[in-house]
Length: 130
Image 1 (cartoon, rainbow, N blue to C red):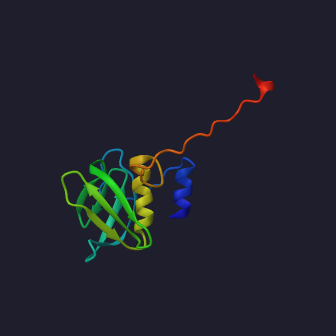
Image 2: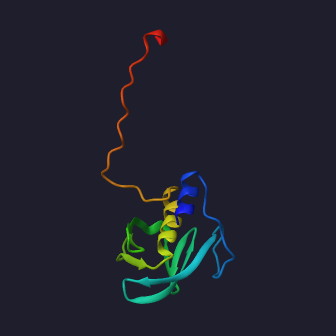
Image 3: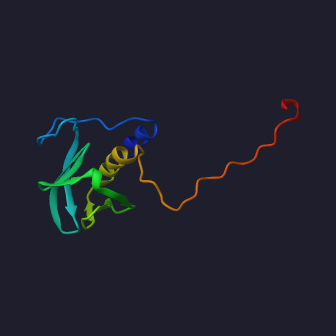
């Protein structure tokens, strides 16, 4: 996860793997792995450039309204438009979270709402450069 996050921060993109499910036009599969769904059921998740498939149920990435990683718990809560949230956990979930953020935001982590951007310091111009 850390290597992928660093790669995405430097402008890289996740690399596709050999598909294990039928893909749509221009879709790339990034991986498949076991996850625990909503703290109860162990399932297989497949992450692509367009969707997250959990036990055959499609969750389009275009419908994700928020990605909320849970630090220290190997889990993420995904909020979808018009659907209840989906909580996934397992050792591969942090890696999958980076892939989802790379696809949605072009960054390794989700944007943080309400956190102001750092202010630029005013730098005095050297008199010789005026």
